[in-house]
Length: 231
Image: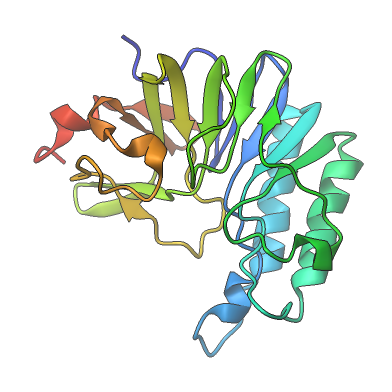
């Protein structure tokens, strides 16, 4: 069995699905910069915009899906968040792509920044993109989600990773994306056990395989059940 899904092409913290020609990224958490207890700004907006633009230039997708937690905003919208969201929307529009936004558990104020959302997105090939904080409410060919912010420690270094679960939910493939924001440290999956994950899609994680993108190459690892204690 392949350690990487044959139906996906990996980018930096995002995935392109050639079948429906869709670029999917999750957990941008716009506003996390303002919420961070730091003395210097982290240039969140510039970082998100430039990395999204690079992915759009590489894949030229017909559709872009933000798979939940576009925002990291509670109560009020911090300064700069509107501008960052507008820049992200403009980047997608300038690439002649259609944008669809899945509502995540942090996305309680999307209306305040003028963004419409859906509980899930079903693509032309039957792929369902959901956030992953709750189980999917619809049957699909496969599921792509975020929410977990997976990361794996390799030789002492923490790396953001994808988790590929062949036939792991209702006999369907699952792909969990790392957080697109680089302000999230990620949740280590090396020792992830049953019932310990934030996402119910990972309640039984043994069959999921980490995928790490390094210098543009997707490196697939064996299933988590076989990795415990090895990395």
